[in-house]
Image (cartoon, rainbow, N blue to C red; front, side, top):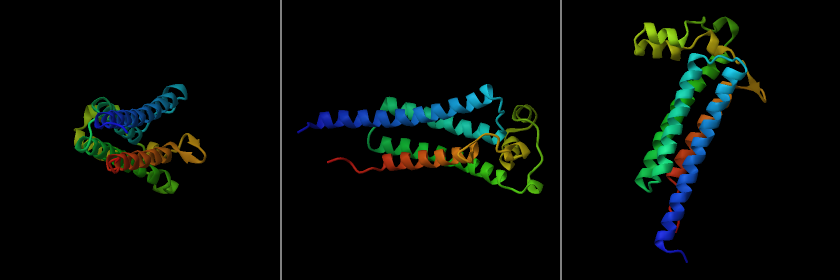
Length: 174
């Protein structure tokens, strides 16, 4: 039979592995996005950039959680914040999927690039324009198994949110 100290060590190791795994998945997704950008020449649209920010936020929180390996309330807090970031990223991805499935005559016109908008407009206007989407956000570009990058991203955000919540609220081992 394991002592209480041994059980805590095993739980902390499990927590560290879980959060490191989440961070690793997000790092892999970000790395693949950068490969598509720099290796394949696919420029990210403004909605793609927002999704990258969500993946980066999840990565950062997961790394902090892995180092801290806090139990109880901390695990719930980390899981909740990761799930919130995943839901926000998923909302942006869902918006992009919706844009990609619009009929060609309903697609918004392409707008200025994100860098230009950040230099010229206030942040609240930039966010409003970006979330509205543009023609470039409606282009599927790269696909795998008939799903676009945005559709894959939506699936990953949903999986990350579900995993974070399920892990944060799992029953304590006896």
